[in-house]
Length: 422
Ligand code: GLY
Image (cartoon, rainbow, N blue to C red; front, side):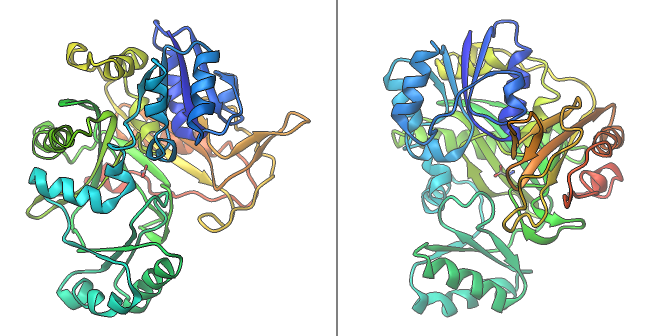
């Protein structure tokens, strides 16, 4: 099988590493990729938001399957174009990708499917902002205001704060930029990410994971695209995970199908385990980053065959997934100043070690690997339990040098210490 992967992050590097282990996969192509992915796949530089560029490349490399990593090409309809060219594609249609592209659409689908989620209001005029803010946050008896960009913002469009002026400033800034604002009630309880391979109404869950969105230890500082993750979750029973599939993911898949927006790809449910049960924080239409790096490190089933089965309507025949025992932890090494404008162009030492996945990296003409983005590397550690996987990840990280870089030291720590309860 020949597979074209679209994207350039550590998520795509993790996908390639897992696809490479599938005995039925004999050729991998990545577009546009990064310095790390070039070592495992043929690398091609195209505009991945262009449906014709992706389709032409898929034809040229004779891809049997295209796997689309990031949300932007999906929301723009690239998967539709690939399928229309007669090539199997793992990734939802433009219609179905609205589950991530429009939070208002997602709320509507969840309401119709009877899925619990945060109470919300869309604000599209500055004149309505103050009254709407008063209906949320501490003024409505909740711990914080949750202010979101009603569109794609790579995780950075969200501000959660108990400070009304900070909530107002973020919302006003979004409105000024012409973006509708979504205000949501705050959901208490630990959060988790449940990735499900979906084809119509067939739903195959992967191991549940947890990511760390704030930049600093103890969940301090601004939101980022994700600073680390671990899987599986020692605090979530198998029955609880199965309950989420049955009460959240399957009803949403059925509702999308009922609306004519059949979902084929990875449906990502982000949930909070509140005191009154699971409630959805968000849905995404693709693999999450950095959770994928941890989840796929534990997958034993052949990923290429799994994604191809979903893309060709045969997911129900695939059978149960097999997983390695133990745990995996990924820690993101970020460039100086990230999530602000990152410092780039610095030489990275140790980036080729085992367990290191690349994101914002490029290869300079002299052969050196240099930083080229905010999240630079994902370091993945594995072990017999979460503590061992943490130790492995931080051991690998200690051998990497990048001037000004930073990382969180507490990825998976509370769970390893048994401090997460639901
Ligand atoms: N882990 C957050 C995301 O992928 O959106």
